[in-house]
Length: 89
Image 1 (cartoon, rainbow, N blue to C red):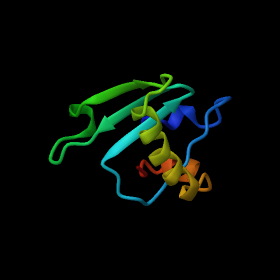
Image 2: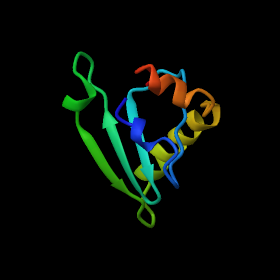
Image 3: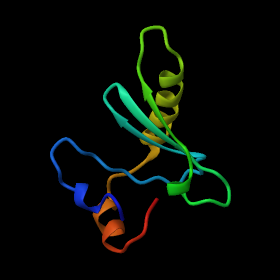
Image 4: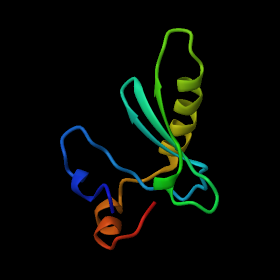
């Protein structure tokens, strides 16, 4: 629902997945926001980590690998339809 306006924006690609995640990961080149989900609390009330890729750093790459595993199985097929209905993850 919050990303509805991003559909069709240049340089933005959205996909949906059916995996169970403990984090929402938003990647922007060498910056990443990781919203750590806390059981019993909405995502907006949970901590967000701002990660930057640094030479020799491992944390960004660790979350990047997780992001890519989910991205590979996610589908862009139903993004507009799901958002129009107010659903999705």
